[in-house]
Amino acid sequence: MDQIKIFAPATVANLSCGFDVLGCCLDAVGDEMLVKKNDLKEVRIVKITGQDLPMQADQNVAGVAVKALLNTLGSKQGYDIEITKKIKPGSGIGSSAASSAGAVFAVNKILGEPFNARELITFAMQGELLASGNAHADNVAPALLGGFSLVRSYLPLEVLSLPVPSELRLVVLHPMIEIKTRDSRSIIKQNVSLKSAINQWGNLGAFVSALYTEDYELLGRSLQDEIVEPVRSILIPYFQELKKIVSAKGALGFGISGSGPSVFALCKGEEIALKVKKAMHAFYSDKNIDFELHLSGINKQGIKVL
Ligand code: HSE
Image (cartoon, rainbow, N blue to C red):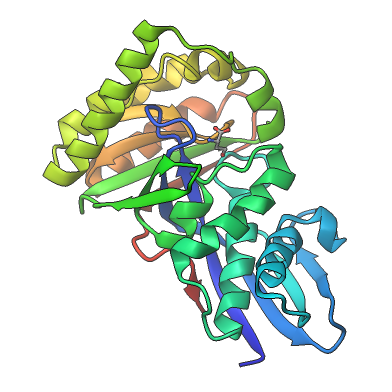
């Protein structure tokens, strides 16, 4: 195999109760990538459509992630990478993760899969390190594995896949203001009180339990974040108003997607999700802020070959 075309999906990280350790994969939106072998012994970003992003491989998250993989193998093979960006950088739905994870997935396939999907997470994390100054795995893991991922430990890296209740839907609103992950990480307090930690790990444990038992109400109650959300939500226009609106329409819970500005409402079933989407649309339409809305199921497969 000399070339491969893939779909790299968007992801929602943190899910309120799991900062840096919890994420899920969406099926409504994602990038496309075409990766080809070249004879130049060089990794090149040859084309990016849809966004203005660095073309130098060392400055591009896809280039950096692929180089990490090739270095581990000791391979001098070169690759040309074309990226069609449909996920906007700085949107909070895993734009850099889609590029990093997509690129290593594609090269690994061309190479005959020397690594399994879990092993690819480490390479994709190098892209996240370049993008945000922190090698978090809560977007790249669900992009590569599909469904929900939980990072039990970073050192050593241990990532668990969690079950996906079938009626779960996410409505994601992306207000078109750019918030760089690097910036929205810099404003988070570095210390957490014991009281907040107790609440947070109670909610995270309950969220995981609710995925196993398909307890939708418990999932909703567990979507709480008293550590990061109070700080980051200030940057998101009408965050509190949106929370009230989606709750009135029957959403299970609401929170910031990754580092924002996207927000998500977790819903049971398509019908409620559509009502929530409509209400978000109506509310945001007269706010003089461009926005995108996605209604998505949970993508169990993750990145796929096209
Ligand atoms: N856990 C990361 C953060 C996700 O919140 O900074 C970024 O998408």
